[in-house]
Image 1 (cartoon, each protein chain N blue to C red):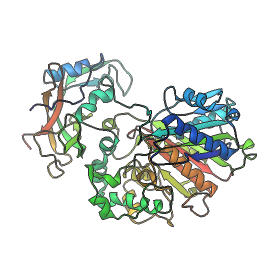
Image 2: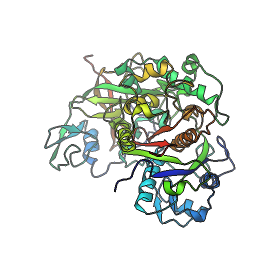
Image 3: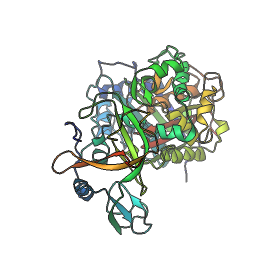
Length: 383
Length: 138
């Protein structure tokens, strides 16, 4: 039988105790710190956990052993920063199937301090190594914005409109004591910040921080026995396209977004008008625009006006990236976990910049440079 | 033109060897799907459109247009900033990442959809990179 909307719930959620610069913790300890906080939130001990998911080869066993967990289900799906959306989706399916009862999903990344991080070089024999690396890309700031000029030309987006994404997110960050950057900025500030990779400047690129987060999932039947308000998983979606941004089917739209997003809405059985709160992974300033369009919140080419006119600001109709996002809150390297954490806080009613009356939240993630996508829809109401 | 030392060097695999051998000889080699006739890139011995192994290698015209780019302003081994990391859309359809040579690395000079032509620049005795320059006729 297919999984029903609201059949599985998040009963524990927490970030690392500190965010930003955490020079006193190696990467594995960031996983553990977040996991211990999430277990405390759920009133659980490691021995209560029977499933573990985290990103990367050999990581589930490292995290499980470090925490003293004996899992009977593991998932090491690593498709970049949205992997946690996929973990939530896979964990929900595993609990539905009876493979595990209580699943812990962890993220920890020493993105800034680089204490025992996972190395990420493109191998010279890989397709990226042969057909992109020789032309001088140096990490995400040079690769993720590659499609932006095409998007701007196709839809007539101005540099000012693209800058507005960062301005609005800073308005949200100002309300959040844990956000890395809280001082207000203007469009002019964005357009006068240091040029990184034209057309993007420093304030249009995400932070690089240390931190982590963890989630605990169980069946909604059991969720009622936990101390926190259950956060029901209504639906989810996932997809991948290509690790090579140069090979994206369409530079003005993400195919992975267009698969993951609609599948999440379909499986949740909700409409866009049911969404009270939205997180779109913003490693760079164009992502909220692509996300709004590819998920169908606005039509193609309409995101520039939608954001410029203030529809995603505090107090407006579609609160977007209410923690301040990867641009102003935090970005360890794999931000998807933090988008999910903010969605959980908003549906629990415990966010720093709490939106009044949130019932349903969408957390939409990207992995790599438009390489993968995962979408999760959460609610405090069980259908 | 010569390349600065320090660029990441591609290492061909059995599936891509023909492409790099062609590049060394000054030929831009693409592949064509035997079912649909459509060209594709990067190289592989089957069609990404239908899965057929009936594919052929052919020499592309070397002409294309500037599809999108960034101009990187930070130092990278093998490159002098600012430099453009570009994607060219080939006349035959596929797109590929490249650099634009013989052209100022500025937004004013790098205009989307401008015509480009391939120019092979050697890295060493066995690898030449397909870079692009503004078309002479343009």
